Image (cartoon, helix red, strand yellow):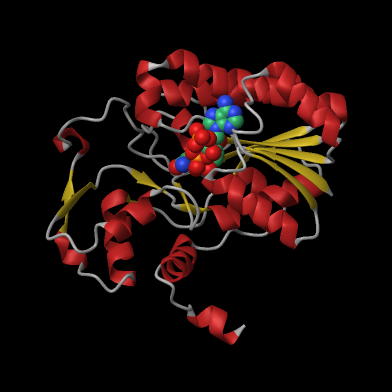
Length: 293
Ligand SMILES: NC(=O)c1ccc[n+]([C@@H]2O[C@H](COP(=O)([O-])OP(=O)(O)OC[C@H]3O[C@@H](n4cnc5c(N)ncnc54)[C@H](OP(=O)(O)O)[C@@H]3O)[C@@H](O)[C@H]2O)c1
């Protein structure tokens, strides 16, 4: 395939470029410096010029707290940007795979959210991402998949995993124990997204690594895998955060992947296995898997 990737400088965009390249695709990787998805004519021109078979929209304004004070910028990138990418992909006859978020849900459900649960975002970021997924499904209906994912991390870009590794020598850390989700690794997500593009599958898919935990639980696991003392981290509740975060987060954002499973697509790896590989890679260690393969 010839694939065009927006937001190619971000954590997911980087792993999409790497994975598609490794699969033999011709990759057009456009970071924000080369393509601002909020600029309609730039998007239409870029997609027409490269005539891709598939477009991956990994571009988004992901600064969840900053979105609260600048909704216009959030909706320009996350909603209108998605509209322009869908329009451009449609004109080029390219299949679109767009990325959305667990933050479209309010987190009050007992149990995991499936693809047909009703979204009710609690933050400007979540509302702008919900608008973006609706734009994609309206404008590129039948030729676009929307992938809702969660707690994204990997070895490229900025994320919680890297933050915790950089803090592992501290005497004391505190992380919330009342927000639950599924840590999801960009290398695994890239594989699933490319599969949707190659099979030209359309509609809504939830796609996260398997297993769930709280931020506190995740930080303990990272410290343990890094050979640091997990006892340095204490559990706190969201209302103990000082200062409080501007954007409210869902308490439960575990996603059920009924659509993915029922389409008999391959199960995503357990988050713990991918976490171990990522910790090893970031600490420049070789995982046992890598040594034997
Ligand atoms: N991170 C998470 O925990 C998480 C959770 C659920 C879903 N998601 C979704 O997953 C996708 C990938 O996120 P990520 O974690 O890879 O985020 P990321 O590392 O922040 O990457 C997003 C990229 O998009 C770029 N960008 C921002 N505005 C843009 C614009 N107007 N035009 C073109 N590029 C623009 C950013 O550039 P700059 O850095 O220069 O601004 C950045 O390189 C997004 O759709 C996000 O909403 C993320």
